[in-house]
Image (cartoon, rainbow, N blue to C red; front, side, top):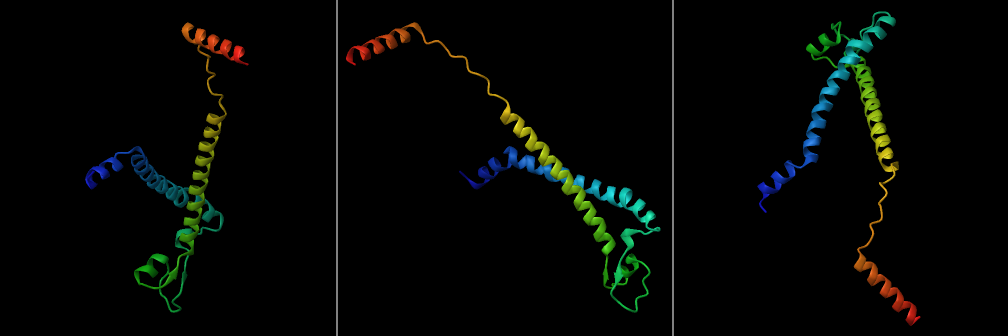
Amino acid sequence: MGIVSEFKEFAVKGNVVDLAVGVIIGGAFGTIVKSLVSDIIMPPIGYLMGGVDFSDLYINLKPDSVASSLEQARELGEPAVAYGLFINNVISFLIVAWAVFLLVKGMNSLQRQAEEEPAAEETPVEAPKDIQLLEEIRDALKARNA
């Protein structure tokens, strides 16, 4: 079997396609969560904290800096610790982790339900008449020899 045909067999298996779909949906989900944190969650928190914009919170490591924002510090190439963006990313991670936890929990619950469902009871099938007759003869011979 050639390497090309082996690759084709591998690539068209369901697991590879499922993985590709999962990666694409995961990327889209990450974008939605990032927007949720940056555009929905953090603005009210910043407002409640006195109008703080978390995405612009930083510590400039250059003592004589003229930058008044993280964007300016980056444009000037000054070293800065962007802890506000880090806070946003931590919150995004927690939301994604919670969503994955709920997904896995739901899948485990469905799997347990499937395992707990009783298997369909098999109805005994009656043996044909000739088999029954042979079994009776066998049993009679066993009884005579015993």
